[in-house]
Structures are given as structure tokens and as C-alpha cells.
Image (cartoon, rainbow, N blue to C red):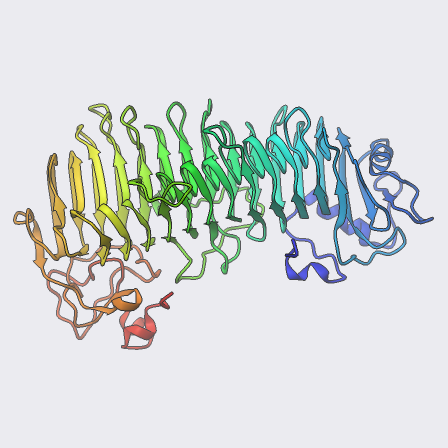
Length: 602
């Protein structure tokens, strides 16, 4: 597999999404003349036009020149046992040149083989560095950090069009960021694969006081950490006091906790942002494995806040004993999935702005995750877990506009808030969501927590055709459950109210009405879906639940306006459709919902 996007082989260096100081350097490189004492090029290679025989010699020479410099690495030389130290410098180190005379991009990056007892690249002091068009392998970590690249100074690092593979360390097999001050680190158009950490961060360790970004053209794949209840973050580990903004594809990474991403044992607030910079590629956690908990993500907020903000994402085909898609433990966990009230997941200083992923399959979905042991034996664990352990209380979940399909678990969502304080006010809220075709052993949604303020809310959602051995669609042992504007079309009772404080039900279409006699606008019956056999759970125009509820606001799972009053359908209590989808009507230009629902069956 080629580590770079297809456009890598062109002969023009296309530069995007880089700091302004680097953009200025590149403009100078392309110009016919270079101002004296402001910018120098230091060429490394094996031909007569190369003044330097080693990368370290060129970097050292550049250190004597004020300002930003450029180290040019040619492919006509072999670079083995490399330990390159950059200290207190602003420098671009870039390979991929055929020779020291040609500016044409070679067909392959420059291969850098690291030492067997140290990092291949070390960035120290007050430095701003870009590494580009390099293949970095064979490094083993300076003081246990960063087999490929170890950032231990302060300033910034950009890794662009690089392949980091086969590196090992205790922390951050491919890349470790442990700044002495603060750091901004970006990874663009790169692949990190087959790296190993004995402890945390198989591919990347993001240390305290770091702001980290990775774009949608970066792949973090087949990395792992040590096993035996020690490893965490097979793809990325995020330490306390760090912010990691990830738009990348993390797939087939393995760890004990957090096969894809982990944040645990933190002594300061931590934030993880998932969003996409490419409309055709959602931020993806795919086929990651946790031998213990948190197949896609594992967040431990027992002592310090950990915030997950995800939008335009896909969390698919991950596995773990519990929390196959994600597990967030501790009372300080704060999880937001497409939560408009929380704001944009991309921070204001994001180098590449966020975009919405293309509506349809693989966008805003949680699908095909499996709760199982490493030998594929099914467990009673759940797909999404908030809380999890008896000695802990849960944090908050605000999830909107997502589809959960074909997951195999004990429950799709499990919330354990049994030990919440009386004033806990902990919330699990889901809106404009589809929960369908899952195979659950117990319930679709199972929430513990009897303390005042423990709340479970289901708003404008569709629950349908979930299999397994369900006892009920929802079991709620909490203070308050609200089910509003929703469709529950299961072959089992809607609600197991054992331990429930109170229930508010408004404008719902339910397959079973037991326990809902005091609700407002409740209809017991079955919806007519467009094509449930092929996973299309939009309502037909003639179905119960169309133009049924009082007008609301917002957008549905397809991104359409939430309320469309169909002229040919009489309102029951108002113009809003029940469940995850609003029939768009004339706004779509067609009357047949099969062609205007914005969704193609997988």
C-alpha cells in the first residue's frame, strides 16, 4: 500500500494548510532570488552538488543562520542509523528530491532509518519545524518517547506527506509530544502504521500543554500498545492538559483500553475533538480493538474532566469486552455527538476548517461494533457505555443526528449512574437518532441511577427492528425518563420501568402502550417505513406519525429542516413527523420519498 494520497506523485509540490511562516519560506524557495542572510538551503545527498553528507550536519549548519532555513534531502543516498537533533531552530526538513540538482519530486519519500536505541528525530528547545516527504522507520524512542519523532521542546511541529512506520517506544511509538512549554503539532497527508508503544500511544502520544491536529488525509493504522491491562490508546493517547483535534481515519489499531483513542490517568482537563476536513471522509474510527474496554475510544474522567466533541464521524466495526464503540467512565466525562448547543468541534485555530460529511451511510453513524473477548466470544458488554463500574457515577451524554445500526452487544447504550450524588444532575440525551437492526442481549437502552437529577431523554428518535433476546426496548432505573416525538417499533415492551422515578411521554408512536396511559398524544401502532428490509427507516407519507406532533426546530438525521407541513397530509397534533426523519415534501422536488430522502441503503 502506498502511504501517500494519489496526488503525491505529481511533479509540483502542492502546499496547503501550513503556518504562515512556512508559507513564506516556500514562496522564497520558488523565487528566482533569495535575500541574503534571511533564508538558506542546505542540501544533503550523494552527488557532487550536495554540500552535506548527513542530515545532522546540514541541520547544524542551518542553526548558525538566523531565521528560517531549508534542509533539502536527496534520494540518491542511503540514510541509516539516523539520530537528527533540532534545537532552538526554525527549519523545514524535507525529502523526496531525486538529487541535489533537481527540484522535481521523486516518486518516493526519502527513507530515514532510525537508531535502535533512540529517536530518529528529536526536536528540542524553542523550535518551529516541518518534516515533509520522509519515510521514518526503525527508531526506538529517546528516554522511552517517540520512536520516530520526539518533540520535547516548545513551539510547533508540522509533519506533512510523511510515513512513520515500524517505530517503537514506551510512549508514542511513531510520534511523542512532551513539550517543556507549550506546543502546536499538526499532521497532514501522512500515514502512521505498524508502530508500537509498550505503554501508551501506539502511533501518537499527545502530552500535556499540547494542541494537536490531524487532517482527513492522514491514516493511523495497524498500530498497537503493550497488553496485559497496561496499554492504552492503540492509535492515539491524549494526556491531561492536552487538546487533540482529529479528522483522520484510525483503523485496525489495538490496545487494552481505547483501541483507537484513549485519555486516562489524567491530572488536568483533556479534550478530544473529532470532525472532518473532507466532505467525502468522515472522521473515522474503524475496526480498532480493545482487549479490555473502549474499542473505538476510552475516556477515563474519574478525577479530571474529559470532553469528547464529535461531529461528522463514523465509529464502525470496533470491538471490546465493553464499550465496543466507546466507553466514558467517571462523573466528569462530557460527551457531545453532533450537539449544536455545544458549538463547533473544530477550535477556532484549526489549520483546516471543518466541513460537513456527505449525508448518508458512513456519515454520523455508529455501526457494526461488537462486544466480545479477544477470541470473539460474545460478552454482555454494551456498544456505548457511560459510567460502567459500580464504584463510579456517569458523566453526561448529549448525542444528536446519528444512526446506530447492526451493533452486537448487551445494550446499544448502557448508563451506570448508581452512585451519582443527590444533586448529580447527570444526563443521557439522544435526539434525531436512528437505532435499528442491532442485536442486543438485554435492552436497546439500559440506564441505572436513582438519584435526583439523573435523566434519560429520547427526542425525535426511531427505534426499530432490533434483534437478539431483548426484554424491553428501554430499561430506565433513573429519576426521570422523557420520550418525545419518537417511534419505538420493537417486538417487545417499550419500557421496563423497574426503579423508574417518573415518566414524561409526549407525541410518540409506540408498538406497546403499557405504562404510557398518562402520556400526551400517544398512539399505539406500527409505522410504515419506506423500505425497512433494506434499512430505510424513513416514513411513507401514509404512515402513522407523519405530520403528527407540534412544530419543533432544528434539522433531522438527513440534515433537512425538522418541520415540513405536507399539504396533502392532515395534521394530528401539529406538522412535525415523528422519529429520526422528516419527509421533506416539495422542498426536495419529488413526492416519492425513496428518491428524496438523501439516503441510499448500505
